[in-house]
Image 1 (cartoon, rainbow, N blue to C red):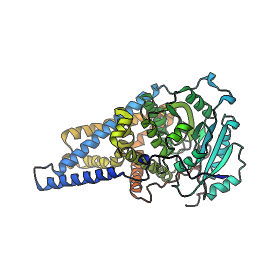
Image 2: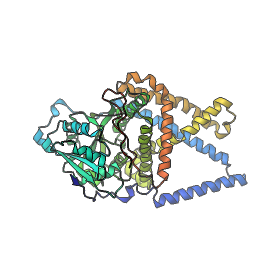
Image 3: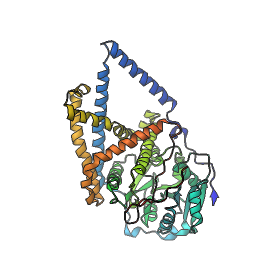
Image 4: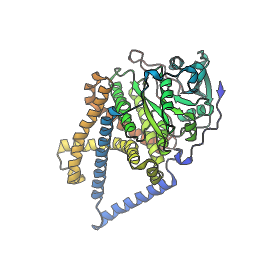
Length: 484
């Protein structure tokens, strides 16, 4: 057992989510708020300025346009995804063991006593020569639960336990940076505690990176769930992952747009990862943020033909904790990279800039405003158009109605297409209840927003409990670890 050095790769401060807003963003928020408040007051006291109702109509029209743009963008990615030329290994691509590059596997684990034995077994069985493999189990110094479980396991020789020093944020990226500081491999990958990667995934990733130009610094494996049939929640979660990893990310790959990395099974060139400053320890979706930083550097992420299976969340509270963390991290990522919009536009180009806004900005905004539009729809159905007509211009009302009808059908098409792509045919009827799943996402989004605005919760990493489902997809509840 060794203690990691507290010195991590140097992440430029402009890319750190340690602060919620930069000074420029603070000034912009105050100035915009003051200008809007002044305009509304002026509209109340004089007819020379737009009325408050005009501003409400403008906001509704803007959000409606955002819905249309986001749904169209997602449909484009889903349609384009199957035609993407992702990296595929050939049968004659197998490299001799002595020619394989040294590989570092990072395994950040926190209070994972239940999953630890299976994780060690899974990684040890990967088809990669042990003498060229470095496996780092990254454990917090005060994580007595995991350390006690490690004492009961005989680790293979390629495994090393690295204790993450106290003092930094208690997050997965902070632990990964501690591992990166000790990494000896030319390539590295992260696996989570419940991951079940294909046995030859490291070989495929090494071959993929070797065949690509140096500007391709990361290849992302697809993620899927092995327990889609546990309950209603896991069916929707599996369909969502199918849309994301089997279709949407492939579409981003096809158009060479910034790819928000998944939290696991992304394989990096170590020198490039260090040049980027590693992961942001204050960002709770450090993976997606890193994907944007790669694109801003002029480098690329590609999707390659390998799958890692994970456990879909089957418990509602656990799902909300995980989803709120993801949404909070997407908000952090959007705020960080929008500190200088003109520089972001220059780095990503117009297409990449638009894709970033749709992926990180519009997606979160629509999740937050969905309940408001559902309430307006219910008011329309109950009381007729009179109560809500003043809030819409005629164009916005017709566009909003069309967006609601066509948009719901489009999203249904997307999740059903994902089910068909991943052979989840039995889940297709369940997709008719997808509005209930969206409602859960909105609840998680508001929790994320509240946490982001609270300094004590801004960088808090809510743990996801694993091992809730047995090997045959049936739920069971493992012992709950003690609270922090």
